[in-house]
Length: 89
Image (tube, rainbow, N blue to C red; front, top):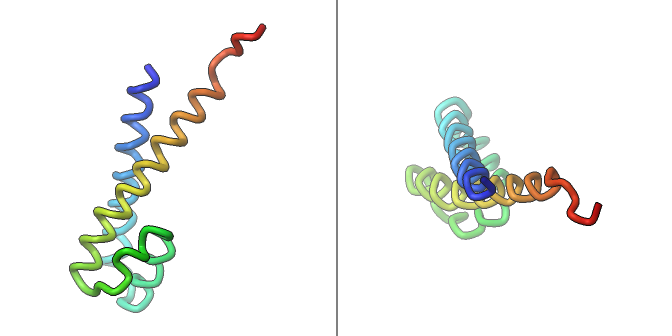
């Protein structure tokens, strides 16, 4: 059961990041979207900070997506651990 929750957390983190980045990329001004992408994916954005254009988009989708997938999985795991009944009682 916990593995399924972790997989869902991975998928949800990656999907939410992808939707957010694509919405930002196509709806916001060029200067603002770069700034927001860097802050949204901090600290992994330091890896692709020198890129521009479509390379920046691809790197953010991949590297930032992996970062947020890990965050989603970790949160799913922690919430699952906290929701378990205590074995001490």
